[in-house]
Length: 237
Ligand SMILES: Nc1ncnc2c1ncn2[C@@H]1O[C@H](COP(=O)(O)OP(=O)(O)O)[C@@H](O)[C@H]1O
Ligand SMILES: [Mg+2]
Image: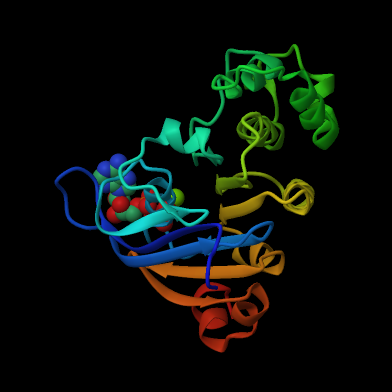
């Protein structure tokens, strides 16, 4: 990997003045590829995503987008530069309609957003059917679609998803993964944290196992799935 599209390299840092959570952690994704971060609860997966998105001050290491160091660039500026982020929690406005959520997602844009809204409804047809319904009334899987759709409204070049399939059934998970693959095929890089490690690594071009804020294993999804250590410790054998 000479020049990944997005890379957080040797990231070290924590929250406020607190202890370091990330210890020299490196995460990268190539153009149009799917990278997946797995690891135990509390490993720092969400923290690594926040660091990449500029929500954490790094004490060492750096984040580069398309070869450009982002320094202390704000999350809003990172969105303007092509990063989309769906956080693990509170990722939709429940009292607003589906369509209002999508419109909110486009807050930085000054051009016509109708085409992008139509594209989101093509990707997730159920959202078109429910466009006037409050997002809070949707099922868990549909809410995650709203969250992903909202992030797509800024036309990101890299889409970061923190546990997009949390709390959904296996069927809904498969469906969501299929849609995520579809997004990647349009050339958008995907960086995703997943609890469903085995299924996520199956669709991953690159996988990262994080343990205690550090890289424990890195490889292609297939390599990690075949690694006896990874299987025993993180995939249930
Ligand atoms: N906002 C926060 N302030 C302080 N510590 C936090 C915050 N969020 C997470 N942490 C701590 O950072 C560590 C890693 O958490 P997190 O990145 O959420 O792990 P994961 O997403 O892998 O489950 C945990 O010890 C957690 O308690
Ligand atoms: Mg997390």
